[in-house]
Length: 223
Image (cartoon, rainbow, N blue to C red; front, side, top):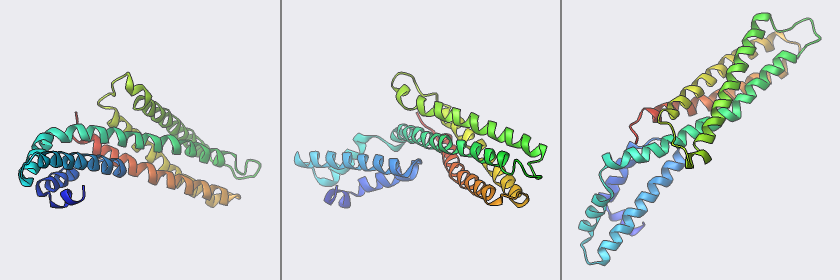
């Protein structure tokens, strides 16, 4: 991959175009690009060992791998599934934190004169319900794209469903952050609620970024 890859104009152009066309988790994308690059380099070596001129061998190797229109959809499908799993994992790990945050808000200062207003309690129940449903859907996604994928096909719309599940969960976390920040001003045990709000804010940041990337991947053509 060293000497040949540095000289291979057609190969480097092909790899650069492929890199620009694909979107998904950086580490998985980098590994995929590296494997394709190595495959091209090995093909060039095989052709040059047979006496073919280097430039011709490079052009032929690129031709044998297929055009970008042929290669990108299948690669993007793999990256989209990987991004969906990444988002589902983020939701599955952070959604229970939202429930825990509201539990803290519900129980803190229970014996004190100040307690959560009735409206806030209803909001807590709704957001905790959203988080619970999102966590269950995320867990189901991880199962469907993991072991079960060996026997069952992955639904084509699953990544988009995961993206919007993550988006909904991130919105719930943002609302929880604002509500907990407001509650911490009124509560006696405000450090606990402030900590819960910070935890909800961090969870929102993680899930929102992953869901945004998942929506982008889900909109790209894939086979």
